[in-house]
Length: 318
Image (cartoon, rainbow, N blue to C red; front, side):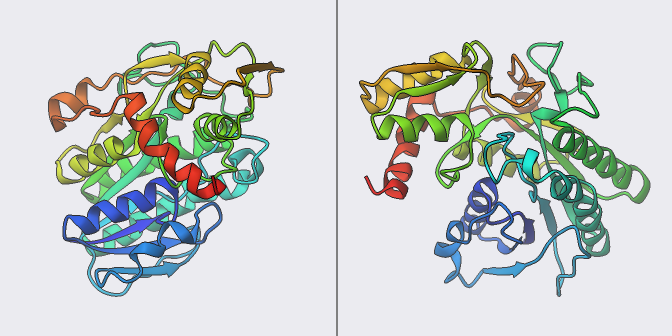
């Protein structure tokens, strides 16, 4: 296939480019480097099946030649209000990527009669009252709160995607991505795993916001990309959760990172600096992915962290 990937220079977009090229597909990456990093794609530039277009997806998209699939991954994704790449500091750009960007990417898919895959998120469930979260759960979301620029952009994107499917007959996919980690995350991303790994590698105490009792489920990037690839090749139009169902507290994660890196500095319980409406619990129900895609995570947290830590050592010069 000849495939367009928006947000190609991002953490997940770059891994997806790599995987699709390894499967023999031709990939056109698109990014404006708002949060993406050109270095994430540097190793692909000599691949004859890869090309790149620098472009903001909130503007009209034109790609010469026939496309077989369009994968829309362009969006800020970090909730950290202290990171320049966090969507609280990029609220308008985040809304435009989810609304105008999705509309423009769907337009390209429609013009080419191509398959369209939307990168959605577990954030559409908000601070869930159902646990674990099934795809049938409608969510518990504040439409005007401090996370609303991301949550509502993705909820709109899902609605628009399904509208194009129902009205125009576009072959669509929607992946709801839960917390994921791996190489190519930005050092200043602000999310919990990059923060913990860096602090531990520097032999600094790991900073816990609040009491660390909030839970997350962490999926290694290779597992997530495998699930997305299987979804792309499927005929499933309704949303599918892709994530790791093993739930742990942030405090448990901190202890595990310190153990793996052998950091003697311990932990610091800090003031609660989390963004408002931070979900207290988050865990995917992946029954649908198991049954329809024959997919489930293969990496344990320890295995995934052991494959991720060398990247951060390299970026930190350790």
